[in-house]
Image (cartoon, rainbow, N blue to C red):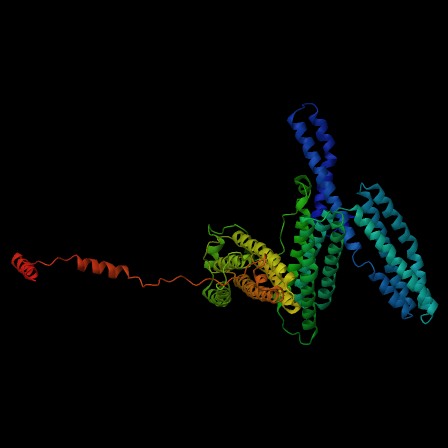
Length: 583
């Protein structure tokens, strides 16, 4: 394996250190034979573990080559054909060299994949496809040279088209064959790391105003994401339909239909704004959020795929829990989950923000409270018995309120990990609401209402992901001149804005769900509005007594007055008695 071309220096160092250790293992074992027992067994166990680690790192090194080499495989061919159509033979010869190097790279990487695979039949197919690529490469170049010499010739153009189709077919066969003999887990791990690296490059290019790098790197992200979707879709065809496949396919659908279109839109907006003279201003945070959603989408797919793996299989995937896609300043220290600074929780640190930042956060919270009041007014209309949509809306509202309280240094959430867990709960509630509302939409005969409801559900899915990212809110502590300065305005406002957007989407979803149910009622009868999905019943007004009850204070007063006895003299009482008797 050519380590010089591997992107990750850490991976290279791990491979070299493990290799050196394995070179020394025979000496360790020879030394341990004199005294058999725990030292020898320990050395054997350590050697076994190092061997397994080395095998895993070599697999990922090869997969790193595959991920780069089999990305945008048709670009060198298309460039070569365009140069040939223009009749520029000099350019054709230059691009022919690039095309030849690309073909050699495909063959070399395919052979590397064969060297780490135990799939004998798959290896045979890969080597056969690589041989076809090797033999077809000079023929494609000759066809391009012929077209460059006679660019107006219909025969030369048809000949070029034939070789183009044949090349694309063979590359597709080789790609599928290589995918069959490589591990999906390793592919997802490497793809996730590459997308993380590309996302960071995009953000840096955006901040520096480098349009070319931004466009090129964003194209690589789209290509890698598309390849992840293609490979995992093919992998799921090997499983029987069930809960596992549904979860994976849902993650794929979210990435391809929701996250990637938004990312492409933000890239287009950013490139258009930076290409003008002078560059126009645009929402940089929107682009960063869209980029991080791509990374989160790929990571969610990987988590879904690994759900059925055994603990032994997950042990080989030791980097699964690593998560670090925040660009960090060298002059600052970020508070991590559950990490304390000077014995204070993250909530206490948020409470120490400067007054100016607290005022801005208070404005955001007030805006959030307005959205909350709308949701409260909407859910207050309905009886939540038999209506899980209302129940879930109330739960999400309560959790989001706790998250916004955290940004003000209040509430039950103490650390960043609490906020992250709260965001996960919201995401789970959002998924359940999505399932229920989609069932309502499926029953709705009105296409317009159905489309509105589905559009609001897409917003919920998107804002749940955005809230999950923003939940990693961290106060930043800077050491300037020996004085600790706490700041966290951007992260706090992003969290509140995400919660506000989600709250608005939930309000619209509740309204649209009821409207869709009424459409269903008009077509299928009055009983349909209380279908098995959810029951829409107006909340009964509070019971009021028919007779006004006396206040306790008044009752006590009357009792005291009634308990007072009049002192009547015996003579007066006797005279009254005699008077009554006289009648």
